[in-house]
Amino acid sequence: METIKYQLPESEVPKFWYNIAADLPQPPHPVLHPGTGQPVGPDDLAPLFPMGIIMQEVSTERYIEIPEPVRDILVQWRPSPLYRARRLEKALGTPAKIYYKYEGVSPAGSHKPNTAIAQAFYSKNEGVKRISTETGAGQWGSALSLAGSFFGLEIEVYMVRVSYDQKPYRRAFMESFGATCVASPSNQTNSGRAILEQDPDSTGSLGIAISEAVESAAQRDDTKYALGSVLNHVLMHQTIVGQEALKQFDMADDYPDIVIGCTGGGSNFAGLVFPFLGEQFRGGKQVDIIAVEPENCPSLTKGRYAYDFGDTGNLTPLVKMHTLGSKFVPPGFHAGGLRYHGMAPLVSLVTELGFVRPRAYTQLKTFSAGIEFARSEGILPAPEANHAVAAAIDEANRCKEEGSERTILFNLCGHGYFDMQAYTDYFSGNIHDQAYSSEEVAMALAGLPSVA
Ligand SMILES: *Cc1c(COP(=O)(O)O)cnc(C)c1O
View 1 (cartoon, rainbow, N blue to C red):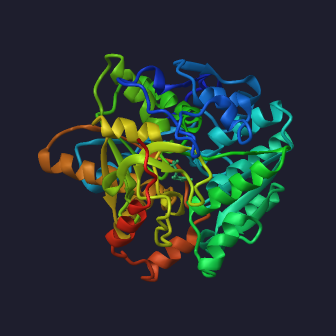
View 2: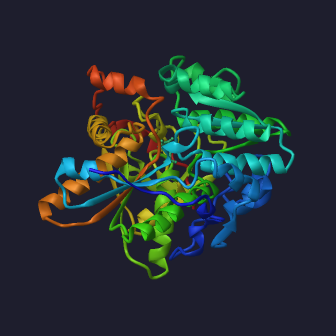
View 3: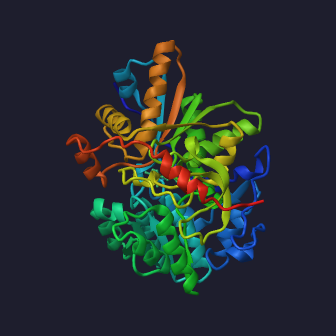
């Protein structure tokens, strides 16, 4: 069976980011100051982010122009290909059509450089010398290190301890691009030291690493902070993915009925889904949208929609999102990019409004789906992406049972070639489906900040 690949010319890399805030049926909830409980203004965020980024964060313009220097770098690997998974369809014996947008073609192997390049550009543009950040599985740290070397910025990465130990190649990647990588919790910050005092063997979490990176940026005038997911501007930078997919579906003379993404902080999901959802909000075709998260860190399916902190040390502003509580530390499973206690406020809002069907899958199920995909399509997905693969396969199997010929699109947001330890563990029977700890979540939720 032949490979069908929809490849756009370089000139079709989008010239604008799409801002879903312009099309939402209701305005997003304001971000609140952690001290006063009042909505934050641009000045409150200025110690952490460059002003160019802050203005995007609060913008309600539908389209924001992508600066030429950013686009010049993006064309190195963009437009990314859209594939039709013909061999997988055949292996499943499904009448459904399965497409995937492949973001693993970026130099860091995931969608993350789409925003890393933009964020590094705005920092450089405003005279910043240094950016501090956190990384879970290492994908975001890799992407920002790459972006830092393009723009001549120093990058300091706090890497969640469990991934630091599991993924030494990620650290080597970051160091190759000149970044400094520190295992978090570390003894370099007050937030890190506080955690280590309570639990010297802490495996860390994204929430803890964010506290450390924010603290590091707040202490120095020449340093800003960058976040790889969750915030509005990050989701917006990722919308080039869905905008390209819309054009590629034009080429294919098709349109998806079902659009699927995995959700950690929500950025690859939103990047693919929001341009389609925007079409729907403006009177276009309705799509069935599925967000897939791990059973062990189920913010959308089992979290509470409430104001919470973005980090464990409670240094960040308060945002309204689906959260498991900022003190929740998920178990050390392999899909490190999906171990965040919260969810992007914009993804939470459209889910709360009923435009997204969230679901949670266990580790073993997602690995088995990833292997099945690899053996048909020849690409080994990142463990995070396996969640989207598993949902695409489930939907294709449902189409088979119902005899319905639907069109499925999912985001293959990264490859798994830095994650071979995860696959080794899977094949040697060392990946187990730990029970979801409702007790721990209940404890973490009991500590939610009270907001009027
Ligand atoms: C970071 C990452 C994720 C999770 O982050 P989102 O913001 O939810 O996209 C998922 N998949 C891959 C490959 C990642 O690198």
